[in-house]
Length: 341
Image (cartoon, rainbow, N blue to C red; front, side, top):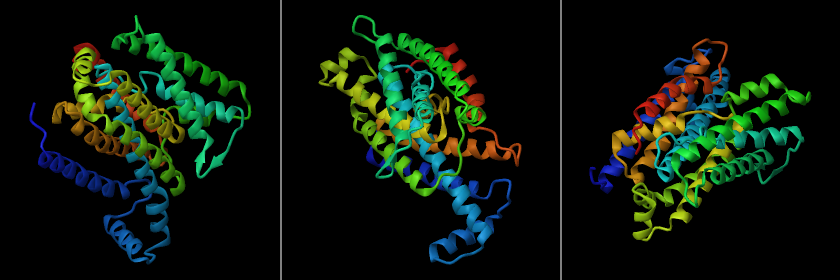
């Protein structure tokens, strides 16, 4: 494995960050309403200088597309980071917030908040995120307990537990959605497929704050995760508090999933595909894997969402369908080859 130096770390982060900015700019003028590159440039210039280039262009760029692209970057990065953390502590590339049932647990929390009609906002933090986080943590606890064997957690046992819990939770979600006439069943199903809309900027900022907290927790454990990928006994011998590290990673991952699901619904397979691809390209050092996964996950979801809103324009399809179409075969490939990290 190539030694990670500060120069290599900075150059890698810089290159993919510049690429992310370039892709995001390209996505600004993709959509059912055509915005030419020149108009996008003039609109951005006008926004920087405080002038108004065009009312229509301004609305499309800064109130529809830019918030949606930024949300895609945040959610995609959050799910990829959570997937990377889960794969490290379970030592299995099939680990993912969706597969483990954590995304479904967060979604159940959101549905419960809608079912009991609770809408509270304190300092900009909505009850929806709180319910989503509670659902994610509760699901984590159930999967953790079901997957434990003699005090240890075999990765495959936990994955199977997650798959079964995921199926049960989805059944409960559909039951609650169908028996409550006050809920719009069609909109709920559409949201459950993973749908990105254009949020207002305050909601975007709150989602970003929660995501940054979760990412910071994972980043703080990057060095320990490098040791933990060998085996728990070796990590303990080298002075790593294995239980503490796993709990922090699970907490950070749950926070990332809750922030994402509360606003976009459960989006599958990003947490599997992106970290695995990053490890193939950069190696297994989580001081590199985590930040690159965040940026790459954001790019992937932004591109997938652009495809979802333009492929059958003006009709939009949930972006979760696109990620499932691309991620499903990838999951089967990993399952078939069993290329465990």
